[in-house]
Image 1 (spheres, helix red, strand yellow):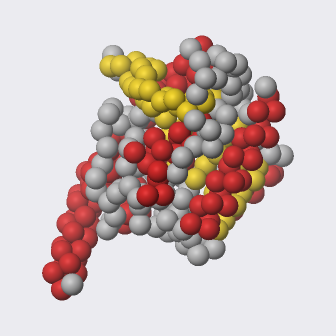
Image 2 (cartoon, helix red, strand yellow; image 1 turned 180 degrees about the vertical axis):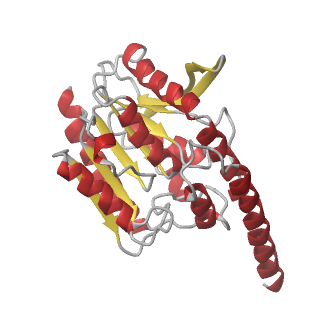
Length: 294
């Protein structure tokens, strides 16, 4: 027990020193929101994305999955994880699923398969070039690479949308993301303000300036934890108020006794009750917005 405490303290000290160096070395970057990635790293500092039995929940109906090439970014092919109902014969609504800061790992594949089991073609994109993180320091480095080159992530997501429309014949397209991916789900809406049909955010970076949010045309749902230090409640309420002032269709849910990553069953912050309620609301949201467009 004593050794474990010592190792935890040593890891935390190493993480703090690493983050301090990264923050200082990146101080002249204009693409990065100061402090956000560092706060996320502190939230996750003692965690590893180890899958649990909860990630093995079977989809509601059988699905097929495969690895597909859906984009070319900076001259390199980009592969993702495609899931759809088994034997689907008609055109389906589709969802772009955007991974947490850990990357496109087994947890994201599992939740994407569950979404597909609700009657969607789901493309889990990869913003990390086929890399995944096993600890907070590695994840912070990968997030930093995306923050320093957001144009590549934008090109990635635009091509994901095109792939679903052109290659998968999607009749409507929504997006959902968690943590790092939650912020990029919002960015997908801002990139495709008239094309995207629905937008879901799980505890991701937000924008509260009305002029930036004004172009959004799709319904929006957001799921947040009251104890999340990286995405504080006041930021969530500012985001909600800005959208309401613009008469946008928005549903925001804040769960008490839940923090960042409360819906991630492969992490150590999982809150079963909040996660189950958010899942039910998410599937209902997509049913009303994407299936209604069929």
